[in-house]
Length: 375
Image (cartoon, rainbow, N blue to C red; front, side):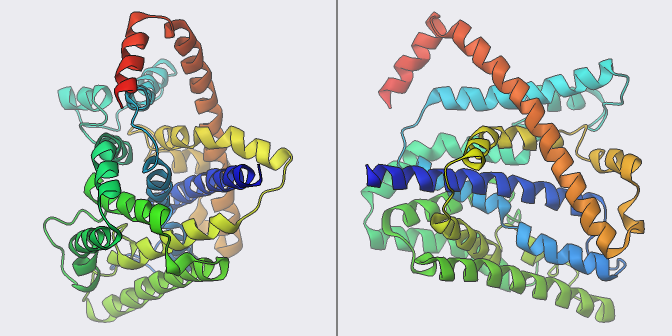
């Protein structure tokens, strides 16, 4: 009983981490869309330096999501039902949002003009309308092969495989200050595959870097501060010399070495977080399943470049607020988007549950259950 209870506590810890990671993702998008970051040739200022510091601690969010998935899916069975639900969830937002916006008299033209613009709504994965969703679904389709490989390899074999992949996807680009043609900064399922294998390795063999809470938190905080130091330092070098305009962005790429290490540190640190029974645990259990919907809502092609402007219409432009105002503006904006996205996805979840109960006894559902049984 004690062992089972410990497993459930760790699970709820990672559900909390999932929520925090989504808040980080919204923060990253907020900083980018409001221009509160240091950019090559752009303006400086204390608020933008603070924006860079905030981004340095939040940039690990996507890798954290994949680590959570890899940690649990590497020991779980593959389910076609899960793929179908994910695809339907993406289509729910991709298609319904422009219809609702058009019906409400709002402009829904964030995508391409003409036929390709329509295709972005109907085929959101194939067109990378949602790049993260596309990469995640493709990664999930590979999990049966990945899991068989992980279980069939010895520890040393897995270390060599992961080391080679990390060198290719992460190592060289982290130290060479030029843009490689094949490097997509971690915005692809190839990088997700690497992170998945890292998580699977941690699940099977552990990791000395995060073997206790102090080391894990130190790895996360240290990596974030190094990212910040490199980003701001290279900004100042570029401002004086005009050099390293590209490389100053590299520390904020998902496949940068310190971004991966920071994500491993934060992921490992939450293993030691304890959440007491009560309302907070119940709230986490309710909010966690809605996090993917929050992403699909605020990153829809018709909303992603507009939501910060809509918020500024209510509470004013962030650029005119100073440091204290910037912090308040950021917190209000991020929580407003998270709450709105959770509310909308709560509606979506109830609709899916209703439809699921209706389809449960149909031949299609039976065929899907039969296919899942094969795995």
